[in-house]
Image 1: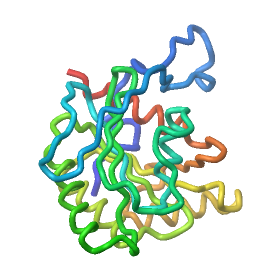
Image 2: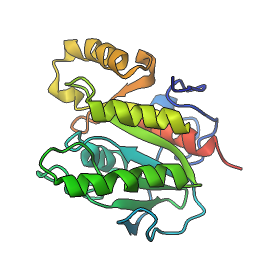
Image 3: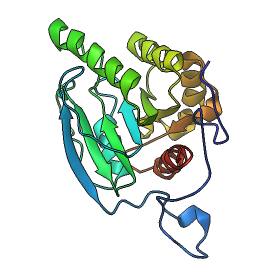
Image 4: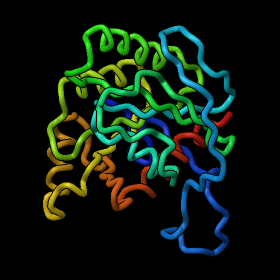
Length: 231
């Protein structure tokens, strides 16, 4: 089972809001946990063991099957429209892309997995690329693992979760596309999804890139993940 910490979303949580805006006496619920002032694309890693940008900053990676809504989620998270490409062709992202956020951490966009129309050669190349990064990145602080709220986890999803548990990477589980469900069905689907994925219901963040629902909670979880591991 995946360990969970104080935030009940991931393995190791910490206090502090180093990445958030200083809001004085503003009510916590209106405070943006992650105010993104600067973003820089650092480059892409195309092959396992190949070139990757050097960084002394903590890294948070985003993983999920193709067409799970990862690009839309990342764009909503950082309040940008086109940071991560939103493509009508799943499986197009073939590199691990690195983005520096506020000089505080590096957002790592992993290639989507599990798209049937991608060649077997491409899928075979992605596996060592993704797994190699997850195993070998010394600055990796955790993974945001995306699951489609509308469907049961795929075999690839379950294999990824088991792999993350095996290597002990703190994992934030996010259920995407909740806006495509009837509102009355969301809570039930989260329970079903959590059970199928082998995690607690309270460990899944419901998210909509359309409405922004879940954005603040995910941002807070990422901030705690990053600052909780500061040395």
